[in-house]
Length: 614
Image 1 (cartoon, rainbow, N blue to C red):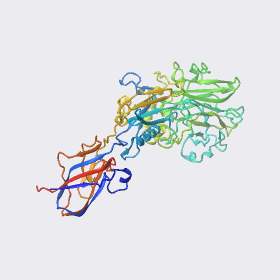
Image 2 (cartoon, helix red, strand yellow):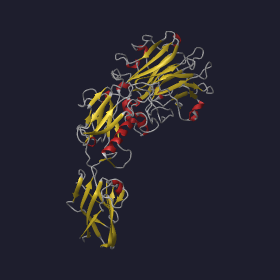
Image 3 (cartoon, rainbow, N blue to C red):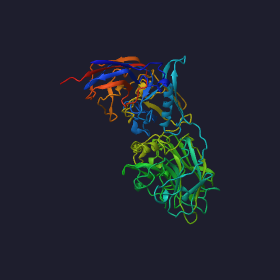
Image 4 (cartoon, rainbow, N blue to C red):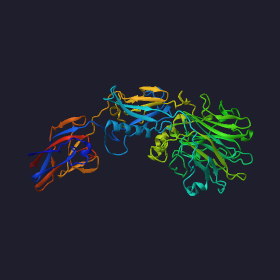
């Protein structure tokens, strides 16, 4: 048996120097002044290791995910209302990296990543890019105490009418795969049907530039004005205006709608042309009736469908007691308006003959559920304008015009990209839209079920009246929160943090309750790279040169040493002598990535022996 001592040539432990050196503490090569002979049929084992492990924030996608939640706070006893099925919300997965790499960051670098990932995965337009994360220090600003996370909201409304083109919003195949200009134009706030379309061709568009502000934001559309004629005298034509999430993929039958939507179950709303998918909508149908409809869950077919809102049964509707749809000829209607307030959606229509807005429907706790809009749920957080215009002999090129639109201008907003749009859009892109279906099939979204739901409004500061919760360990109450594991990483004392450190208006602050761990809890392995030991790393699915697992160093920091209780002898599979000129050593994680938290001076001692004869 012989002992070989290997070490890097320690300089100053500088990361910058290590990145360009063959003498890294985590990867080094010892050249020999003369050859070292290893006899045939030998074995190797780790005798000991001495390392200097730097204190950094070490994390990975699969080891340290956690969840944030924006909605009604749940009762942690798991039984008392509200529970998750009593809400319109769902836990939001936060993965600190999108790669399979293990990341090693200083607290200052990590907090910037934390802030970015929180903003990427909050999805609500009023909160997008409104979360800040910073280092929490003691009074002298010297000692690291943890992290400070501040949630804020957009509390004011701004008239942001879309300036970019609408997208085609009906199907993606056949004639609908062509250019949008074949169907409509959009310029100077005016959306116009192309006169060359056949009568029954569907003209429908969606604009995704700015999602609607859900804190008292409104969309006001001219239907009869100098630039709008769909309800002008003599040019009346069926149309609908509304708001919708964006859908990236078409359903099995080719329509643009969620996979769990059934057009076969749609109610007859009196339109000649087929209607596109919309979450909330108002229009005037072929016979001149004012129609209000929405997307809601139909339990009989276990799917979403377009469902009429029977606004004439709503006590706060201007048409309450009408016994059915209001005929648009009974007033001089020139504008339609939607207003969002938290979870509540209100629809109004402007009667120019009385110079007054008339309420079509709005939330009223005691009203029948099918007489008002269902609450804005998490799959509907990002709502976009949708217009559809029919055709008849009097008007083949109908026009609608934005009068006012309170959209939120979000830097980088793009619902066609992961984490750049709403929750539904991202879940659909990553194949997790079953989570959205779980939310939308709850009782609040079933109008034929009498179970009431108290829709949340805005708070006194004009923000959404919801609670913020951090889910740092897996919870049976905030479910799903699979594999959540960031309590120690972020420095909190509770698995579910549902009480803020401070709350002022819509600004909610969470601060670490203990000093976050800067101890590397990832397993470390020693690898001997230039000999023939036969090791299989089943995690990576490949052969490896690992010779030992440093089992006692996973929760250590500073200068540490390891000596195994029992040697694990590995065959070198050398039928003849090996004459070595160097030893190539590295310290790695399970994914074979270098453990760059190992700095300074590393010493690795190896035993070699001839394989015992059996």
